[in-house]
Length: 166
Image 1: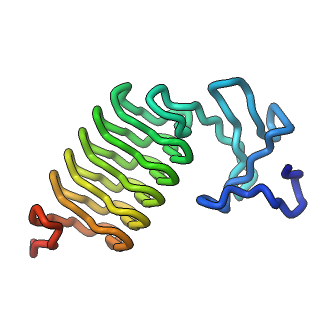
Image 2 (image 1 turned 135 degrees about the vertical axis):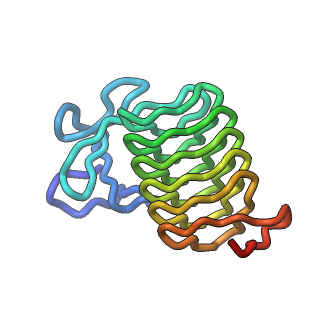
């Protein structure tokens, strides 16, 4: 169990900056109900997340996730993010504020989509891939595992995932 201002052996391994306080409620964080949980970030602010209907991932207040999208357990969708119909956000993925994930897109396990980034319809983001803030992944693009897309970069690929010159 985590107690404020003390080392926490129960930190979230996918996102170590998140501290979960299950034994507390209210402003200190914790389980608020069966569909909501409060999580304190590294700046001390508490954010309220709800469990998504088509999965068990956590969606922050202010994020928009289509009911036909699938957010797996351990995935985090931050405030202002938008997830389209049929999109899949896999276990441990982290979608930052104001990011947009298109219809039918797939974000694999432990991928990170930066603030304000956009992933086009039907695109595929690989395992442990980092998409920088403001980056654009075009419709149908395939980004492989363990890759990094720089902030502000626009990426188009062929069907096999080879990056095309813009």
